[in-house]
Length: 413
Image (tube, rainbow, N blue to C red; front, top):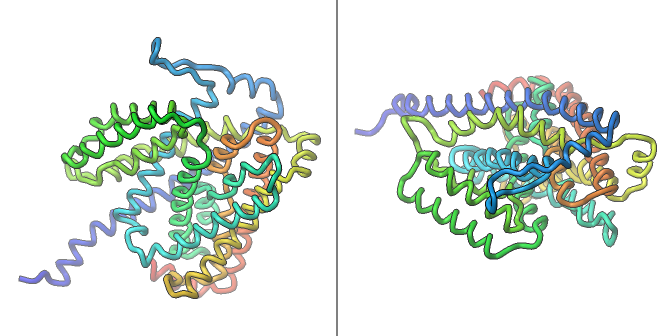
């Protein structure tokens, strides 16, 4: 007998509620995490400016993990970027997998606009940066202004409350996730050096083993720990950045149920707070420290690398997002979300110019010495400008159309 409408509704309602609950939990964690992250940034800046020698000394200290020939020795800063940040990228991989399997990226029509907007928001900043730094010492940093910081972007939108329609928040969240995918590809393809084919072959074998385990129906996460560690070691030694192992592990996580629990959702639920409240703040503490004296600020003001980052994030992001949106709408491959207008998307493009965590990560891979400090100052300046302009623009947009935003909130619920 055919399933009735009421039966279909009752069967899909729990899934819809679960999806909404997961999204609200994710957004609230990111919002609160941005406060902790901001505290870590301020702490790093104060520490670096009170005692630069102490700051450098602590993060350059070496730590050995392992025994004998299987030991790995890295500085504390490298353990953070190569080790702790692998967990961050693992959770990013889980977010991408969830969106592909059950979220916005599953529906090509719904995903088209934020995906195309994200591509425009990555290409334009890289282009502007490259034009300003072509042939110079800062040319290798073109990937720095490409990514959006999810935590700070979500925090800005959350601070505006009901003045920002919920579909716009979903748009920015999806855009930032696609940004993460783009950043991962860029890091793997352009910011890896001295690739060892032997170690890369070992990584391929580890991935192959996990693929076979998935096909055999192995869903217990504990079974993937040993091949996952092997993959991380192989990636670290291969010359391809070790954090890519985290993304691969996230994407390979089986989308199945164990004891009536979604494996991906459970992992995100457990690991997301650790990344938000520990991993990313520690990374910011290790990476955001920069001297802000008169000399360093003057050097940054005269640096094309610094200005390339500012131009890419504060100008390239909103321009790239807007042009990509207009193109998508013009050719008819996407439509505007309910209650969202072009002014909202311009504001979203400005907010997307907050490029902090991944931008700092790429800066560390791109430069050393003075160029690195100049790029970091550019990231800090551009992120502050983008947050302020985006919040002000969206607040103004809300005041112009309060009734429309209220209707959009009702529709989104």
